[in-house]
Length: 83
Image 1 (spheres, rainbow, N blue to C red):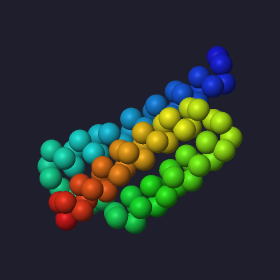
Image 2: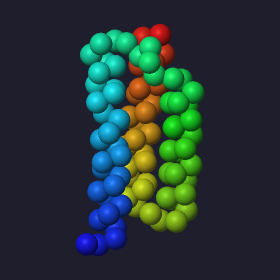
Image 3: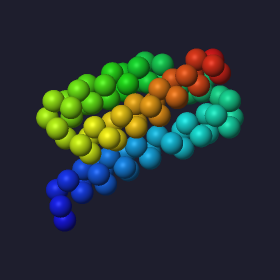
């Protein structure tokens, strides 16, 4: 198996893992169990990963960290809306 393929597969799984929470939060209009500190910390970490991926030309990390940052940002917005 190609090493880069491992990056794509791992990135896809990690990115997909957050979708059920976003979907549930949107459907139930409840985010009471989601910590603002968690979402802000995760977004900060993802922003750093994106910077690292750009500087080191790591395409799988860049793609999936960017997608996950967008998903996490949407969860953060839902947290603010449904607070």
